[in-house]
Image: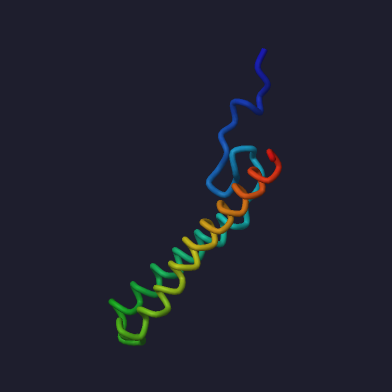
Length: 83
């Protein structure tokens, strides 16, 4: 008989083992914030597109960079533990 935990799929903010991932949450929030800033700069005259581009770039770089850095550190940790 299979255990129930093997049938449960992990959510977007959880890793494969079911642990909560704050990095995934921060990545999601940064990407959503970049989208909101982009939409505000297009549809409202509060901020121009030129003024919002550095903010959007920084948020998207943070959202992709942090996850990439975490993956790099995890692979380095796994490699050093096997040696």
